[in-house]
Length: 91
Ligand SMILES: [Zn+2]
Image (tube, rainbow, N blue to C red; front, side, top):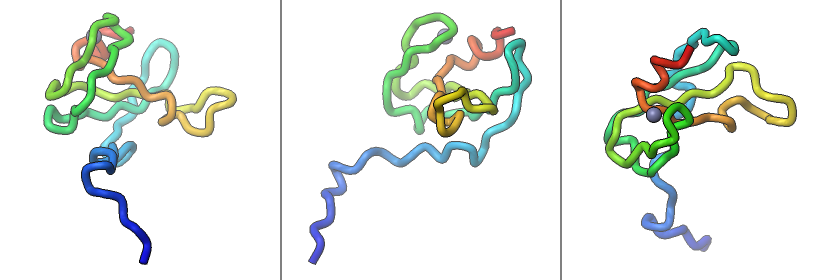
């Protein structure tokens, strides 16, 4: 019988990337943007907009280029977590 990994060792609920994403046009191209609810935010991220941290329990947005960069399989792999306001202020 295969040994199943402990529930506690499993990573948290995977981010359902893309399922609720919307497309947004920014100065540097098209981006996919997905809102992260406060209860989905379980880690601390670095916001590229203000270089401050986005802590657990903070609702924010995840953004990735619609067109993957050269050498990248998917734009989703390049996703970044932004404060909602920082993303809105991005030109
Ligand atoms: Zn920020």
